[in-house]
Image (cartoon, rainbow over all chains, first blue to last red; front, top):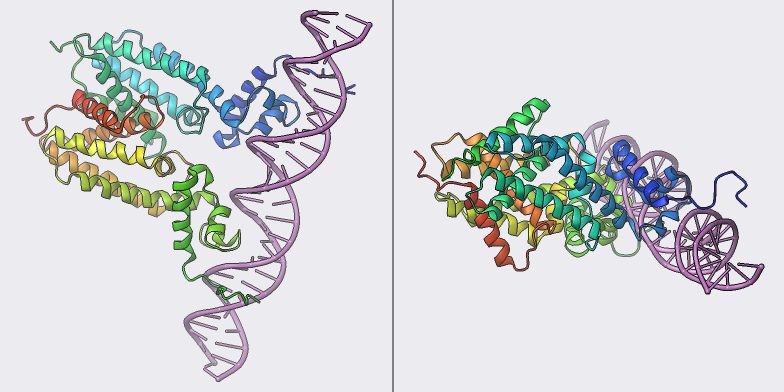
Amino acid sequence: MSRTGVPYHHGDLRAACLRAARELLEEDGGAGLSLRAVARRAGVSPTAPYRHFADRDVLVSAVAAQGYRELTEHLAAAHRAPRTTDDLAEIAVAYVRFAVERPAMFKVMFAEPCDPTSEERAAAIAAISGYLHDIVRSAFPSRETEPLANAIWALVHGLAFLHLDGKFDTSTPQQAADRVRSAIHALLPPASTTP
Amino acid sequence: MSRTGVPYHHGDLRAACLRAARELLEEDGGAGLSLRAVARRAGVSPTAPYRHFADRDVLVSAVAAQGYRELTEHLAAAHRAPRTTDDLAEIAVAYVRFAVERPAMFKVMFAEPCDPTSEERAAAIAAISGYLHDIVRSAFPSRETEPLANAIWALVHGLAFLHLDGKFDTSTPQQAADRVRSAIHALLPPASTTP
DNA sequence: CAGCGGATGTATGCAGTGCACACAATGGTA
DNA sequence: TACCATTGTGTGCACTGCATACATCCGCTG
């Protein structure tokens, strides 16, 4: 049958599903991200996406992987080779801004069940982790990178999460940014001046 | 009817629901925490819990509030009035241990949609926040408490989250604890020695 | 000591979900 | 051209949250 004009085969349903998933994420938040809704939006039968995503977790992981990549770009846009703690603070602000401006995506990335075997996701996480290590090495060339990078990532990530959960009363974005800056300066010494 | 021996009225269904919810959390993880499952376990009709919890979010918030209180106790048990950075590190280790040992509860507390109007939840969060402020004041009496406490909470919380998500490869609990300790020491100066 | 009314639990139903299964169309390849 | 793996469809089941109407019970007031 299918004399409706639309071809039986979609062409690139996988990509269409990912696009639909992102749109749903923006509109309805993470809760609205269902395989059926994705299928509906892609104009396809409710179970068609299962050909490309074994289950919901796999879809979520694919979306999350995209999010990691975008976060990395977003941070790199804020600063590429920070030298001072002020530079680092701006990267932290960018991280938190990403979380606050796109809460649904951020939660998908960090607070949603996902497929632990997803290589795409693992690679995207490794990329962001590597980027953070580079940054820290650039700002603190004389210190051991590993533990410091872990600590800074945790700090910034924690700031983002606490802001997102409304653990802080973040009236204005400006205020949130200042809180992030002061938290960074409370824990980080002036960069590059360490012997 | 109800000649089954069980009384029509439960007595304290609200408490029973919370208990059931916690058991489900331990057994099936956060995903298994549904109002219907709770009702089943409490031996009551599927919609009975709605008399005590307006919707799922309210139930989740109540469970989370309990979790915050337990976390506070758990931390206080690790240390009550830390003076050195080592002491603080042990509290951080306790925080992360709580998260890793009871991931489902931790995720309910920090990564699940909840009722933003829940006063019980807000109070429990305020309590943990106050406890953390006390700790930081105790360890760093000469420094401004507010931004430092925020930063430290964020740091520890971020460590917990990244561990939980497997962003770090945490083979043994011992290894995880060491990573937490070294992260803390990477960012915190020796406590109480600051002028 | 009624009996009445609010609080509590039940029964039923609807829409939505993930997922398993059997089936149909398609297009590259032998 | 005929085959057949890939991709999409249709149907069905178990489950969920939640709205609604109904049953039962307890405590309070007459």
